[in-house]
Image (cartoon, rainbow, N blue to C red; front, side, top):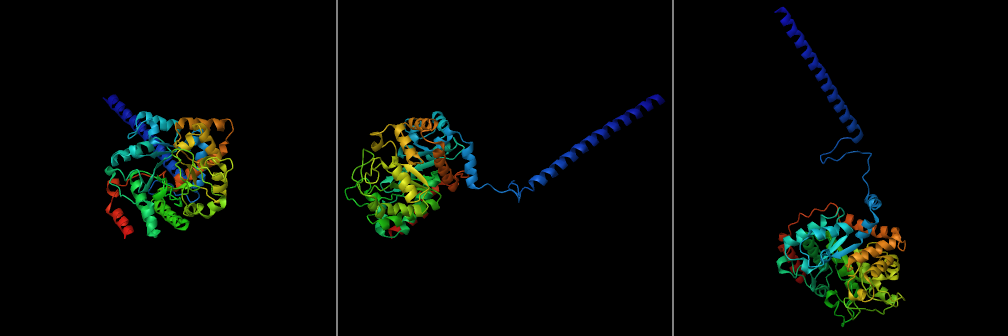
Length: 435
């Protein structure tokens, strides 16, 4: 019995010792963890409510630094993809209202920088919102999602009754009021309504001056025939759109107002000399630049008195770089008019047109068809050093600058399009213009 009790005592003591050792080990681990947390706090300082670090010595990267870091981390193919804005139907060579797996693969393969919608891509509010959202989800770099929504004749959204958008008048009606504040109100309405769907770029306003009564291409799309009035209207419409965080794109540089033919169909020429263009046609574009417009669309018109090679403005280094960039001081986005138009496809292959546009100083190639040919043409030209990679970087830098400027990297569309499109607020604003 005595021996049995002694054995029990020994076992109890052994178990107590093990427990003490375990506790000591656990205490040591807890101490190590606590010291680690302290060390981390000494390095990282205290985190604020948002979980970010309050480090007074750590500087937030500037936008320029972020952009340069992004460019350094992008492949050549990714950079070139940023310069292409295709029409939504090019994702499947058919009317696209939903993004299927094939379309997703196209978006990812070419790292596209933007997509433009037309009326056949816009059926209903939920469908349009979803298509835009699905397209955006294919890329880590947000895309420009654009549309031609000028008001009046050119209204891809408002002409569809399913969208119940505010129906706006032609620019001539606004110009005839003589009140430039009305152009700001139109810009506001356009910006509010299209951004509620997820669009972040509008190919508007028209900056052409209607000085030729035979010009049916521009006509009532222009604010009028007086360059100063048109310029002031353009300035205010740009401000209205961009105050709603939508990129405005003034068009059609160097001026499509005094022409008679249609670049959708074939060649168009303006025979004005540089003095005339500076005095008249350039005025509204300069006002747009003064308003800090995000984009300028370059027309496919020929100006032989300006560029003796008789090259279309959109493909002319003389017009894009020497005049728009250097003379007018514009450093925003230079965007071609649609590269599937007759003025281009009747004279050039897709590859050649895209290469010439990039060489001219263009940043965004709009709707080359098939865009894959244009993409491979630009890529091959950089690989062969016909075009420098630095030239590509210039355009990608401008593209990213605007995407940061419009806060697209943080944009999460929580707007209620059903409530905003055709809202009483917008209708009241339109009514105030009519008065």
